[in-house]
Image (cartoon, rainbow, N blue to C red):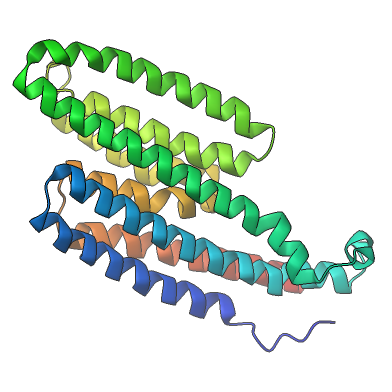
Length: 256
């Protein structure tokens, strides 16, 4: 069997990621005070995506050191032993490439869609006629959600779930802050936005929380402007949940 001298790697790594995420959130808040809405949105998306990348990296390496090692040593994955590559190289090809692809796609699409919404809101506030473009934008968002769910479901439900959550959050934000529509009270839409952001990924699994948590926190901070303690409180809450999930998964495989 594989030596388990690093059984606490997951907890240490997740705690380090938690500290990093909080630091990045504070940095983004500081940047938000000196930048306009568009630039501060970019700051939040960038720092959030960076935090997501680090957290998911810790989680992937935890899997490499525990679960995959158990599978190989127990002989349940004989194919892995026959491949002319190291276990770490194989894991990198199978998992880390998917992670990098998802992080880049989430960053690019979510960032540009957020900037597009900011531009639309600024234009519609100056000229109400421009606000009619919001109907086209919301329709495009729904279309993108359908396309990406169908596209990535064939390759990875993790990719499809995380990206669709991000796009869905942006649709809700567009509807919530579409200045020419006064049918729905804004405070109710903001509440719905927060519920979807922090509860919907939970139903999809804690892996989607890792991907969707930080960018969604950033978007809410830019638009809804919660207090810094609220933002970091949500971040700490989900970091603790991830730590507990990793610890439970590790114990489950150790006891099997």
